[in-house]
Amino acid sequence: DTEVTQTPKHLVMGMTNKKSLKCEQHMGHRAMYWYKQKAKKPPELMFVYSYEKLSINESVPSRFSPECPNSSLLNLHLHALQPEDSALYLCASSHVGRQLNTEAFFGQGTRLTVV
Amino acid sequence: DAKTTQPNSMESNEEEPVHLPCNHSTISGTDYIHWYRQLPSQGPEYVIHGLTSNVNNRMASLAIAEDRKSSTLILHRATLRDAAVYYCILRDVRYGNKLVFGAGTILRVKS
Image (cartoon, rainbow over all chains, first blue to last red; front, side, top):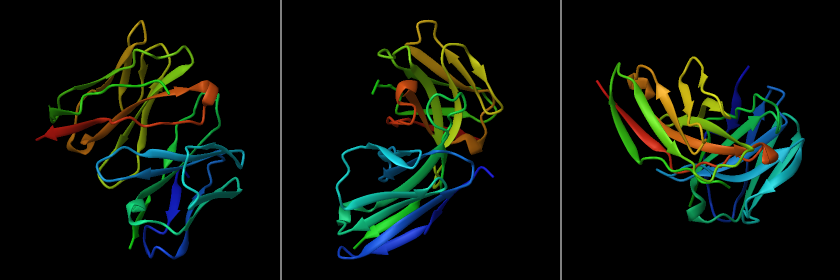
């Protein structure tokens, strides 16, 4: 199983709503990532978790709150978003650090629209 | 993060080889060169990676210059399904979990 599963595939939320994006993998990967991708732009790294601990936060606003409850799951909690936060949110996973096979596997993304 | 420079776009004919260049003049000794591609409406997909020597796999070949300041991704026979954005990324093993995308090259394949 080389799949990263993201749910939901599409999400529309109001600026006062609270919602969560979910990501799951069963490849035994201990690094998990969140990216944000706007149309016709490359993915922008948001957060990285290593061994279920937040290791990288790329100065992301606090209205985005990541959580890694176990080695297979990664959540992104959303609160008080702005319309400019509308984007494709991608999750990825990989082995950690210095192992030779450090390719990252990406999910298909959640298309988020903030209204 | 060390920077990579790629052409904005390239075009290829179907069934012909494609050479996608990447410049990374500030590469450090601990940077691995990774290539990913993103097909329309999909998440990025790993293609290949290397450190110093040329690498081959079922998808592509990676040719790395002797000074490591540039590399070339080679698709041996382009198909319409290879039309995608190709990203060249430097990944520092000291910060192994950081994977930062640059602008990439849009590859168009003509039939």
